[in-house]
Image 1 (spheres, rainbow, N blue to C red):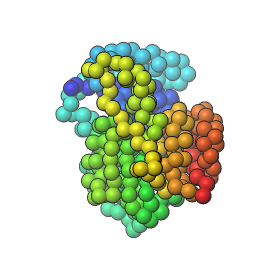
Image 2 (cartoon, one colour):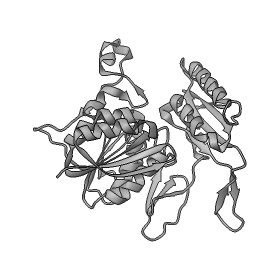
Image 3 (tube, helix red, strand yellow):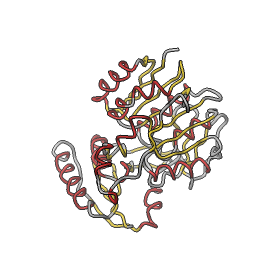
Image 4 (cartoon, one colour):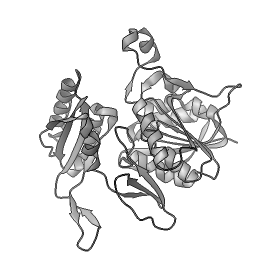
Length: 336
């Protein structure tokens, strides 16, 4: 398969809306943001130049939908350009074998929270004492550590993972949060995603971080989540059932607790989207042990009330909230 790389230079204040637009159409919602870097004078330190434009990129599979997606992106960029400086959309075609290298140049070592360090697998890093190092190759799966929602979840994981805990990572993407939980001391982690590419990426990254024995990876969702298909391209279950056999999505695993096969977790982390979080609120409660903790993100601030109301109706108690820009992470607890 060939791919289209779509890139646009924009004002720093426009990075968030441009990223959201590209994520809406880009493969698996993946977006790379290339900040204008000013090298340090005496070493590897660097800073960002806020006076220079930022480059935002995404990738599209070159198929029958590519031209329509490109047209929608160009229209959206034109509208955003009425508000902030946004450059023209640049497009180039790349081959499948060049995919990984196309992404790699936009990632660097990054510290998240107080102890966690995300290191792209192709870079070297000398750990500091007490560092929790995650070596990651995002490939084509969402979850590189660059997105604020991933970082918000990681910060909360540092607070709430306890030794030996049973953890569920719902919407695992590259596996970054599942791996972080395992490296922070979880006894077992179930990593679920509705995208088979994410499942493959999580397995590979778990092996790369020597935690494959702790993490079980499966294609599927939790309870009602299975009716949504892919988080970023939801297809109701009825639509999948009515579609011709050759056009149906692969069946998703509607994993849920049952008397015969209880699934009970001390901690659930779910970095997906607000309407899925709200829909599966009762399933979160059913899957949590008494006193268990739910960390959820992927929530645009405008959609926060929807999630808060669903959690309250399901009986979850709020214990923490964290926000970065327009993105919100919530921490809830099931009553003991």
